[in-house]
Length: 216
Image (cartoon, rainbow, N blue to C red; front, side, top):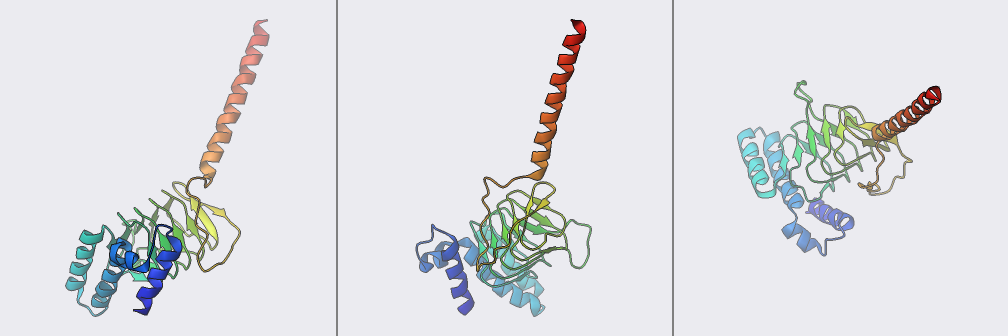
C-alpha cells in the first residue's frame, strides 16, 4: 500500500487534470497497469510463467498498456494516458520516471538475453518515442516526442529526432525531472537541413547573378 500511495501522489504531482487520489486510483489506466504488473512480476519471478503472461494480457486488454511480466519497474512511475505503451521483457525502469502514450521500450530483434533498455531515475520519455536496444538511458535524461533512440543516452541529456541525436542540457536535479516542452524541442538534424537549404539558395542566387552579368 505504501508504494501505491507513492504512485498516486506522483500522478497527482505531475498531472494538472488529477483532482484527487481516489479519482486517480479508480480512473487512471496507468495505475491499473502497474497494479496488474506487480502481480504478473511476482508470478514471473516464482516461475509461474503462464499465469504471469495471462495476467499481463488481461492488463493489456483492460488498459491498452502492455508490460511484460519480466520487466523491472522502479518506484513512482507515471504512465500518462498510456494507450499503446509497450515495455519489453528485459526492460528496467528506475524511480520517478514519466512515460507518455505510444512509447515503446523494445528490442531491435538482433539481441539475445538482455534485449531491452535500462532507464535511469527521473527520466521523461515523451509521446511516440521508441527506445530500442539493450543500452542505458541516464538519470534525468529526456527523450523528445517521436524520437527513435538506438544508442546510449547520457545523464542530463535530451535525445531528439530519427535516429535520435543527443542535445546536452544543464542538469537540474529535482525530485521530478523538468518536463520537456514537446512543441519546441530543437531537432539538430532539421536545423542542419535548414542551414543547407539556405546555403543552396544563396549559391543559386549568386549563380543567377553571374549568368546575368555574362549575358550583359
